[in-house]
Length: 314
Image (cartoon, one colour):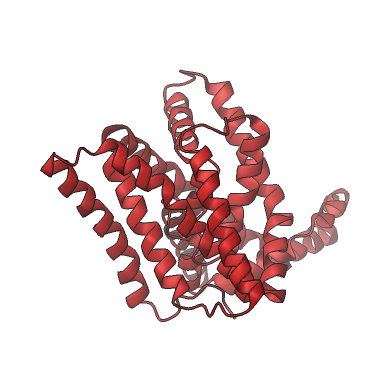
């Protein structure tokens, strides 16, 4: 019975990871929000901030039974196995959902961006409703966030920033911060950096190449994904901690800045929709409007049925 309970518990963690990964694969919905909803947010934060590479110093002791017990005790103390199982769920969802999104962008680009617009706009409305922007610092942070995102998305509406490996590395480090920010989507941050569509394509090509036993630019795609993953790992030890400290010391100003980033970034999906939909074509306008409405309703329903939805857990 205990073994069954243990397997069931880890399966539950994996499924929660699936939900987080699915959320963070689309702009406007946050994996951190899903962690909050499913009751693992505080455990996730504790585990991330408990990671300590000094445990590797104990590897030479693995030759003895006492050494192995001490090593695994430290891993359990950091809740590393929880992070691994959760990460497998997140990774599974990202690989799956990114393929769907990539196909959608290729076959129905304006409607897909309209859906993103609805997701991001509704998320910003929900989060702003929980903020009280009153002090000069909070007002300045909100204005700065909006202006930065508005002008950056004007540059990165396609590949204005390019896709050099250093930028991919930076994108991984920044996107991972969404894990500790309920309400801020990792996919949204990738859109802001002009990398979202590119990376979903690379990941799709990589999976296709692996399934086809080496077809395509397997090495090149693997290098890009590995670079992004390396940035994400570094982000766990840097960006996530910096953001967490900013939230602890300047919570309202930090959240005002981040939510305003979302509002400013609406320029990109709006441009994509207006550029891809002929106003004289009623079916195209109707489907774009319907997609935007569907995205907004998805977030609003999530907010309505979730009492715990908030920008930051206490």
